[in-house]
Length: 148
Image 1 (cartoon, rainbow, N blue to C red):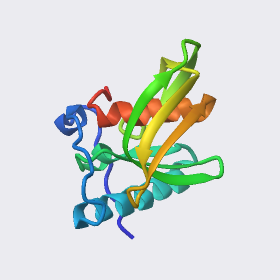
Image 2 (cartoon, helix red, strand yellow):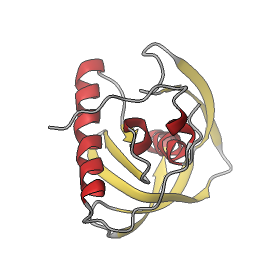
Image 3 (cartoon, rainbow, N blue to C red):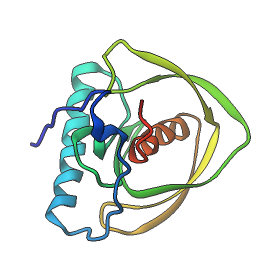
């Protein structure tokens, strides 16, 4: 098990744009995928909330997100939002990189289409709505250095 500390807002790494995953067999990539999974599951167990974690939150500047929510567990490598609905909604957003009780109200697109690769490098093109749309917009913001 590889549980990592989550970087908190103010850490300059959270403002960096992450690099694309190119070698899915590289030790650094495999370790980041494992650490994201173990760390998120540990945080969920301890706090009973949260659905995703992005690599920069654990100090890795790779474009990797791990999601474990509502019956789905999967890695998204190199995710890019390629389309979004004009329809938006307001949500109170929680982040493991903020103090535990901090919530911020944000506006998110109700539906997004994301192109990404899974942990093995297989390409996917998937549409997400509602909860998953908000969650992935939040995590992809982390990958783009837009997390504070």
